[in-house]
Length: 471
Image 1 (spheres, helix red, strand yellow):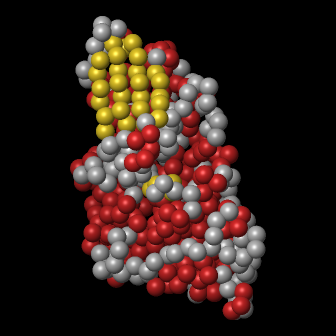
Image 2 (cartoon, rainbow, N blue to C red):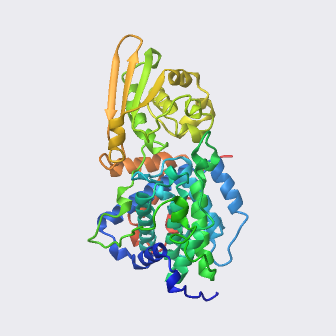
Image 3 (cartoon, one colour):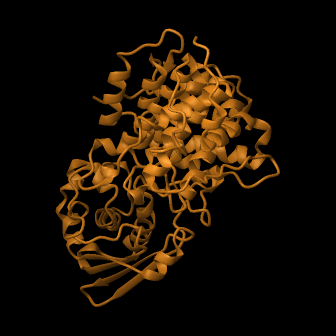
């Protein structure tokens, strides 16, 4: 392994130094019992999504590629099976599974994304390096801190970039922690995760493709790979954040970025501010789906005359002219971002689940008919209250002359309307029951409930080996 040369002090990058110091100082002792419990719940939610997405086309493609690669020194296991790959390819495959259903967590402040994507990298390396559960949990919490505190200060999506900007960086931080890298190595890894890997926002524009569910997997892969390069001694650009043509200059923001330290008596960790999703769809669709499910029990869909939806500006407001794809989605990836499609499906079926996005359902005439009488408008008051509130109101008029109105500020999963433990376990069972046996589900939940006591993640990976492989 090559010995790294110490960077010149006058060329130091303050953002890199702040993040590196944070990674080194973070320990399991910094975590309160409530933080540990919430991080375990986030793991439950994430693994449910991974196994639920195991048989998806993108996940199969990712695994097919991963199977062709092996690591001599760090063989890394793929979730749902016993096969191994290189750390970065296993991380890509595992994260693709996590992301496919669009049912894993969200964090918006209003900047953010889906931070549990980075857990694909954390699980991969924790298992490959035989790390105890304490180290896995610690790495996840520190990854969330980096991702969320940067997202609080820089809204990359509004600048034309994708959320993978900070997910790749956070994944590098997780990998550095689990690999036990030195400060100099960490600083190089952070640079190597950012400089070659800043993704553009085209991923989430127009008709969405399979790549929508793989974009952050690529970011996680790049973060893991960057840490491995630094571990081997590869040096990096000296000022990737603060310097000329660095990230902050390219994003058009200043370089005064703050990553506070954590301790057990300190501020609420950012992971405790994530939101679990009740439905497998984009975060801004959760409220309208829930309201439509309420209405489905009191109306006949063939009696619907018009559907008026009020939301906040960031909450999927569109017209057939402004975003035609969302009013006639032809891919699963577009449909799970389409409020008109999802509201129509919920009104007809009383729920939204992975089966909602079948090819048959995408072409269902009854859904198209309801979409044709739907309108979505911005409510400026709702916009002013976001992101503290996720307001939505649906006014439904019937052909028989009746009107129905339902509204909410806090859809299920929001901090003000959180999942119960039963909600979380039911989600795990519902998303994994087609791939795991009942006994496997119960074993996995039992392991996850006490993961901080496990000396490795071997039993966890063994408990979620998929028994139903679809062709």
